[in-house]
Amino acid sequence: MLRLDASAAGFADDFNALVNGRRESDADVARDVAQIIAAVREQGDAAVADYTRRFDNHDLDADGWHVDPALCAKARDELPEDLRAALELAAERIATFHEKQKPQDSRTTDSIGATLGSRWTPVDAAGVYVPGGRAAYLSSLLMNAIPAKVAGVERIVMVTPTRDGALNPAVMAAAAIAGVEEIWCIGGAQAVAALAYGTEKIRSVDVITGPGNAWVAEAKRQLYGVVGIDMVAGPSEIVVVADKHNHPDWIAADLMSQAEHDPTSQSILFTDDAAFADAVIAAVDRIIPALATATTAQTSWAAYGAVVLVPTLEAAMPLVNALAPEHLELAVDNHDTLFAQVKHAGSVFLGRMTPEAIGDYVAGPNHVLPTGRRARFSSGLSVTDFMKRTSFLSLDDAALAAIGPAAVTLAEAEGLPAHALSVAQRLAPSQA
Image 1 (cartoon, rainbow, N blue to C red):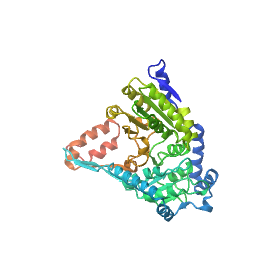
Image 2 (image 1 turned 90 degrees about the vertical axis):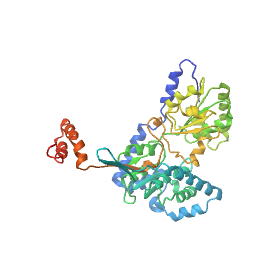
Image 3 (image 1 turned 180 degrees about the vertical axis):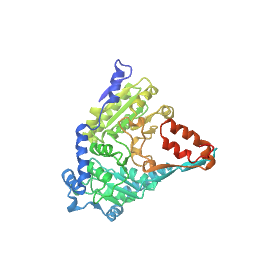
Image 4 (image 1 turned 45 degrees about the vertical axis):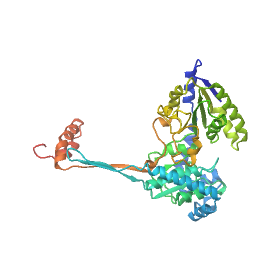
């Protein structure tokens, strides 16, 4: 892991290298994904089945393409009581939080008598990608499907890789709790392409959301414009700003909560106390061997972890804004003071008793967040990702007479005579 001191010579260059370090897919991934997308677009189900057989060792034609909703309901009913209660609590809190995000329509009449405003409507169909592989992402299913439900999307389509044909009962149960009934046993770039273009079996959707590996992220990037997407998500990341009054083990666990996601995840600590920095590093070294995800966490921490010593925690905030992290913890007493200085972050966790991990599951705000410094210009998944805004305008004779001549003048200045004529013909003869 990298250790930096803001007072050291060369810090600016070293920190800029940290900020600009690249942890995302390369040209080979982009090339392979483009080939997969082209094959699915041209060959439809045959290509999807071929890639699923090759990548997931699952014969869709022999073992089934989709999941019966009755199996999901059965899995929900058979869940251990504590797990079902936890999922239901999470679903309730996620729904409540996102209900408050629903935008309001607007309609006003201005001083010239023009009626104008906007109306929000949901997309017809949304695709939700639920990863397989390193973990069973029950929470990601809820975080993607429930906002779509709240938005009013009528058709929600889930795709998830089923390696060796195995279905995760907990994921199926979460689908039932989220109210998802159309589930396809496919994953990877081929699943994203099938949702975007449609195949003989799978109808296309309007928006695709949800996390995935580098191939899934690249497929979403390449298909943006054919469909809407939530974002191009890269490896997970967390920045923790902490003083010496925290327990080192707590902060170490917070850092590892993202390191264990993927070998290319990134965990960074800012502190103003060198002894506390040493204690956290030692705690990380103790914690990692005890984790079932030790290999992943160790690789991530060794390659991309960093501890940055700053003269004051306030001095850390411009550095945090430069990183624009996916997750930001302010584990201090004066968290509101520091929070006021945060310009760029996907989600912020305030105070010593608010670990980022609570936001992954049951807090309510969405955990699908911009990575790779994209929090500078984008936000986490929300209800509005599943909706679109339509503006409207209505003029009567008087309103058109008030602003029409200016429109004619501007159209003529732009060299667009049909535009000018369209308005001028409607004006009173004295104004035409």
